[in-house]
Image (cartoon, rainbow over all chains, first blue to last red; front, top):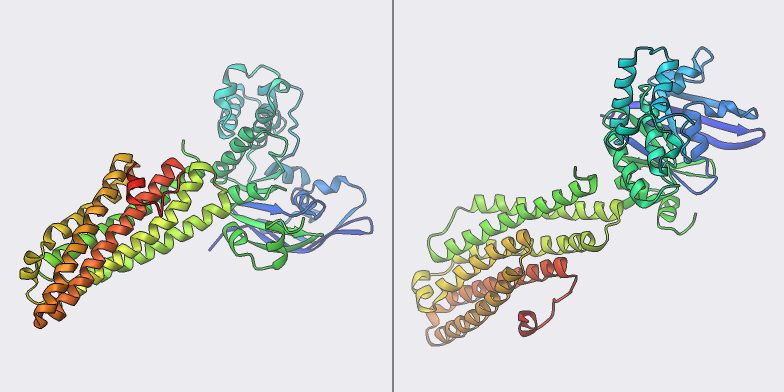
Length: 252
Length: 222
């Protein structure tokens, strides 16, 4: 029986009067990769941002329903949202390294969480960069500016930065859409490795990427969850005709 | 470190090797059953069931790879060939089982086998099956060529043996039942060799991206 990390019950989101997510209910299994697919504007990125409460930053947003992470409703008023965003890391479509050295990019998160010991910081930096499969490329130049790295390297640095604060869940919003095929392949392979330790949710408009990288796939359309299932099943015998039409390219 | 996709391809390759080895055992047992004593049916049935299950497993793996990995070039050819090869191997297994069953109904089997020189033919079918498994493993062009030549030899010997068996049945009506079963066994042996040739053609396709099925023997040889 699979272990459930995130339980979503009747989650709806409004941008002002506009209902962007409509009574979403689903389960995200632990230590698996769940891909969210669907046409542009379907609500997949909006849903992703609900998981780490990034939508709180938008004044007109209202959310109803519940979103439980390990049984705790993260929208409960007693929940510390900063802690949520530490435990639920995020990697964005456009890589966003800090304008600092490679070392400082990784060490920044642990430092503001109270880690002061240099040896400990060094260890965290090395471990995080190794986990992101970029240690060998960067170990000799940790003092260099992160802004000088290639797009693919910057994105893996951002993943390492997320890992440095020991999250449980990693959210990825189209992490490879701005990258070349080789860098994309490295990110995808990294996702396979990372799921051993983390629960990963990835939004992608690239269906083939969803098929290659994920264990479960959720198809969204016009704010609704149409279908969720094992990726193998979604891409070989989906239950809903809309899902079949989307993945075969008949619409979207 | 192998990628996730490479691990899936290796898994598929290993399942095909496994099913090929099982079919080789079935063919070897069928030759034994034909040339010497009848063999235990339970073990044959067990292997047949294993072959059937692996055939289905190969279809499932290939379907999954097509849907999830979008293979191209040599990977695509490998998956396409894998599905066909599995099908051919499954048929070889069925034919071998049929030979084992029919061999029990051939009276005076040993005399007929000597009379129509079937011993060598049966051993060559054993040999072609072994070479077929080898050619999938090694993708060696020389082995593929040897399979085509061996198939041709088996076909000629089988035709000749069947001609002689029919002549015998015409002149001695007591041999009709045994003779008929033996003719069917000859055709089965011939079909096993043809399935092996088909597998060699798919291996050739995997390696050279060239489809040579339906080509005549002379064209294949070149």
